[in-house]
Length: 110
Image 1: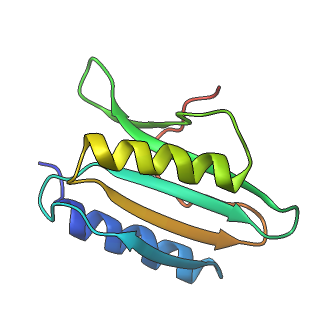
Image 2: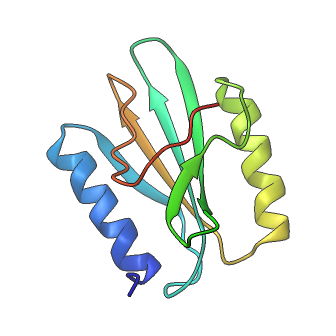
């Protein structure tokens, strides 16, 4: 049984805070079944990364980078387009001096 999105997002934010990062829900989507985008800002080198959840054929949750850019304006434009397609989308922003994402599920390499 999967957790509802609001509980999963709360756990991600808590992991980030325990790790010394700052995390915030930039946009709330459907509390029970909304998809999630995680934007990670690395303040030490000025880069950003975006992670989108996906499901493998076996039903496992994984994360991927939907765009290879590491520039925040590019990621913001991607998020704007995604919100037009999916109004139930959540957006979580994490600011971390090491650029960590705090995701516990597998992250696919680009």
